[in-house]
Image (cartoon, rainbow, N blue to C red; front, side, top):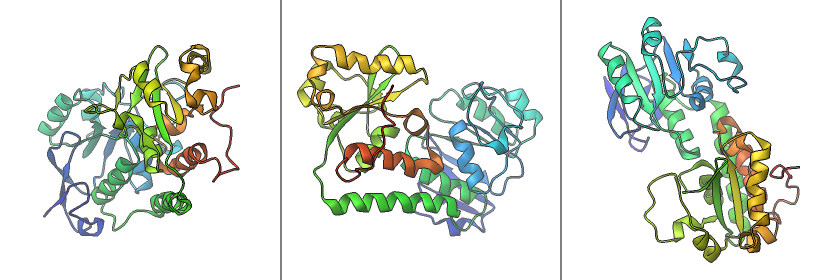
Length: 315
């Protein structure tokens, strides 16, 4: 029996409980058949590990971890099967998995997926950009694992975020404008509202100036001219770090604070140039999404959240 999972608009999780196989629309909008209740699963996508575990799944291997990489304690002892973008096909085949979940952020894993499928292994390529994807991926995982509903851990995430959004809507505050800038140590890229930090800010009522510039936006991060930035002059500028190097991130702030044109921006003059913590906004927060949303709400609406922290500052 097959059931189709199309972003969960046509199917409830409960409908999947009795299915031997479901069909999922993957990162490349292709319909992929996945057998339910896999006995041996490999995930080579760090951001998905916690979601899979929260949905009740178990694993036989993960990606090869980098030094000091943060992953759930339950999987630290598992064998690595190669890097996030370069999984080792031989190592995967030796483990005889039923299901392998790979990154679909780019197309580089598609040849590996084809090879594994030809060997009788189910493969799912997923793309995980923001909180919306978190919810959809959790439902897909629950369907694969034969669960009737989302686990309480994930339901609590939804409830906390819904309550926060209601608080902001009820207050009927003016919507602040913002721009999220991803800094990789050498250049800034502006985030579209599909990227993690900008998605959260817009979900909380902020207005992303990138989406009002008349451009046709496709990528998550794009070039944004200094002239356009000065013309739009947003209420908030958020720096999304690409590195944990604090000196590099301090440099990102200094670029705005010392440049004669940039330091006259409204956000810079009013101390609303904010460095966001990477654990919430560069990486996916998963079960800590409520904390990420609350931190962003404190920044966007300081009058509504006078207890706001200083976690966006660098000493």
